[in-house]
Length: 221
Image (cartoon, rainbow, N blue to C red; front, side):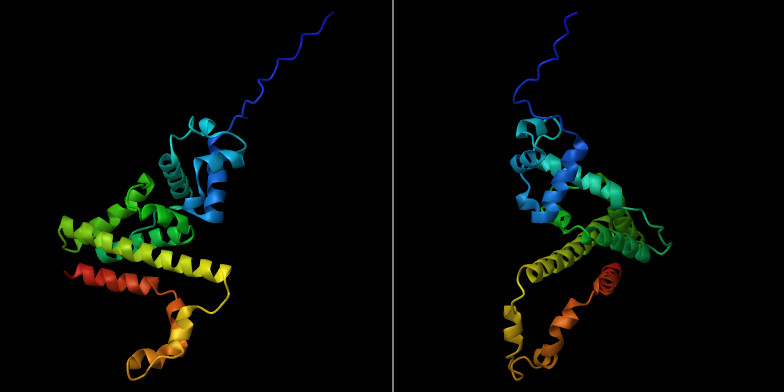
């Protein structure tokens, strides 16, 4: 009895890819090289597919980044138990955002473009704005208060990430060290006094102290 021939494979057809595979590969590219290194062409090449195949899942890089933001937020953001005092609610919500973003600085790079966001994170923004309103601020002032906290949080994370990346890539003395080693005490007496401890002091994690001072100032407007 003759055997039925096996179905022929279409030559050149790229393998079927899943959304999980897209997310995992894209996250690896981001962790290794940052947002600028993530392109649809590179992502397709590393998966072993084509950019056209990716477009069945995401239309462009922005949609891909939103997908990655939502995935990360869903996996990492946990709604904390909020205290009764509104000022403390603001601080707890802001610290929760900082903790998650500090562990993944590429997200800050995306969010600081002030275009893309994850809906999952909006609950935390709501707690900050609502907390400020309960402190006596108008809604407009509360939004401005949130913006000040966001700028402080994003800036702190980006500066620390950039410094860590520089130290990892180049162990040569930085320019600031040579400048601080030769400060004129008559011109900048306070800086000269603390010059030998400047690097250690500025490397300390004082985010929470700064956040509390910022919230205290904003809440008394």
